Length: 140
Image 1 (tube, rainbow, N blue to C red):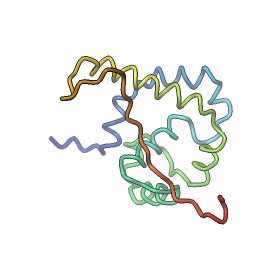
Image 2: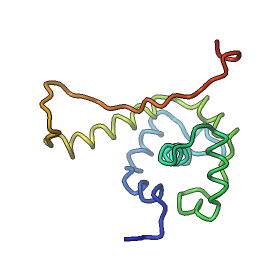
Image 3: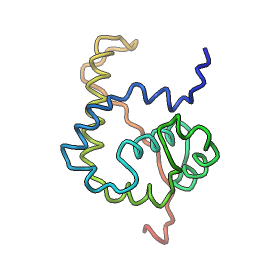
Image 4: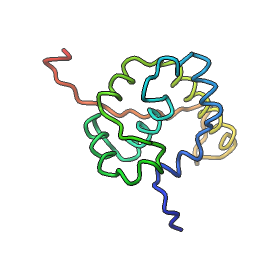
């Protein structure tokens, strides 16, 4: 059934925003944020992951191409690559680690007893292994 919402907007319904806000507050994250909140940064990176974007320039171009859907995705204004770059560089990684742990905990509760067709003795985590091409002259 077509709901009129983007897949990114639908995905955001499953994010525990209250818990996310508590995690950000725990590390004093929003005190350092000027225009791009942690929630907007998460939305932009989740969108990029779902849309197979490969660079900040690619994320910016794709978001700008879908301006009419930005509000539905939780953005009141366009997201610039320089803003995303600054946020990715300066923000506390522990916020993202705690959010990942929260998602793992929720997934374990939902699917912990489901069989996968094979028997595993220990817990197994599947993590994204996306690679980013770097210029070797800048990053030896």
